[in-house]
Length: 616
Image 1 (cartoon, rainbow, N blue to C red):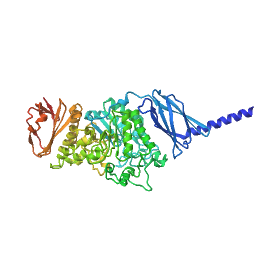
Image 2 (image 1 turned 180 degrees about the vertical axis):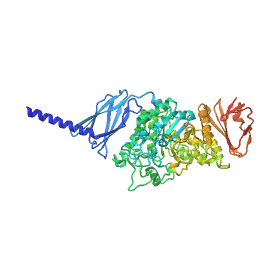
Image 3 (image 1 turned 30 degrees about the vertical axis):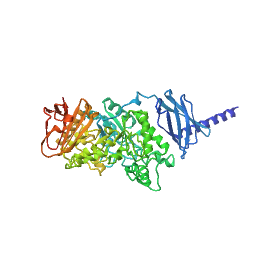
Image 4 (image 1 turned 90 degrees about the vertical axis):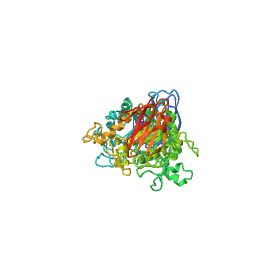
């Protein structure tokens, strides 16, 4: 009897040890958790661990059904398709995997949704979006500059390296955004970029569920969102569907050969986004655009692969539901497979019907950009489902309009000509408009460091149609050339201990910087309450005599904007604008607070912008 008992004990001990060995094999389950009550009841869980591909999967949880278990080429992956039925209760769902007589059970959490996130509002034309490169804005926690085990260390003297800016630095300066009139923050990507070098920008993600710990990690990101919301500030997350970082586990241990777009040797994209909508484009050119790599360190994801598509869609929905972000900016929108991007946008909007997503289509002509906007009636029948476009054609017009001489299609006429093509957009007022960003020449440099041009550009950006996006530091005249990325992404003065100039505290700014900051802040804070700017129509008049005049108006409110590029003071006879001035007798100069008692003739200083709030 003793021998039999010992044998039984050894047998069960062996089974237990096998189970423990199997348990250690499961390294990742993604998404990290999910929610009950989602509009889409389907969920695909990706399991990752050594040799788990042949496992049998069982789930015994009321309301949840396994639809399919899918092993793939790499035996270290297993994809489990579930249906989470209506009425399923939140809780920890046991998932059992068995293989070779070994059984492992782990718990996967199904959470209850917090609030009415499916009805959440997003950023819109009432907002001013402030773009921040987190590594270059403010170092709120020097303790996370370097993380043990992560590949790149902080070195502020290296213009291409990490400088130590983080999310805590943004949290500590939320009052600054309120003060200057900003209502939303777009952060360049904050997910883990554990690359050997040059990944401070965030566009080479190595973990799509982990905020980079050098920025503070997931917990601090949530703290930023919560504290920003408490101050009435929205957060827009920068996402990338086209590529990931070379050090991502999905590249180092690829699930299947066609997870990435691969070639016998490194092959770059041709970067010609026009080919996607070009009715005459060759198949070769379209293939290189969609499948070529952005960079040797940024492998190109294959959105035509349904596993890749599910992974990315679920990841983006996870971040919305988990963190409460108020919108998405999608990088390099035309670069992935266009049908996948259509599926991606539709899936998010099906789950969050009031949500806003703006897409980067870096194309300089209106038809090529408008091709991607939701409800566009394209000749090829394609529907992108993208609510907002980043407006590069209008950016190009602004980059020239305030510095070159007036002509039939030059100078201020560029603004008129570009806006006159808005008929091509299904919803032009929802476009994100900008004077500069992290990839193009700083506006003050573009304006030949002319303060009058700076003010005209600022006035136009904050009063024309669209959602204005402002790049960090433009309010204090930061400069930089577009061909040189480091010069566009210089540290924000005051963000690091010991900085002699501190924008946050308004210390040691040059007079011109103080003037620029005050000008932007005055207009931005005024804009917060202006329904005519947020929702009003745009009526503009053909430019002449170095002058462009337009109105933003509702049935009861009206704002008149005069942009003048002449070098002599002048007096504007307003008879030509009678259709929009009818019923208004006086006006207030928004910048100076000066009262205009007579609108028949308006004095216009040389090379200036007037923003006039009309009064009855």
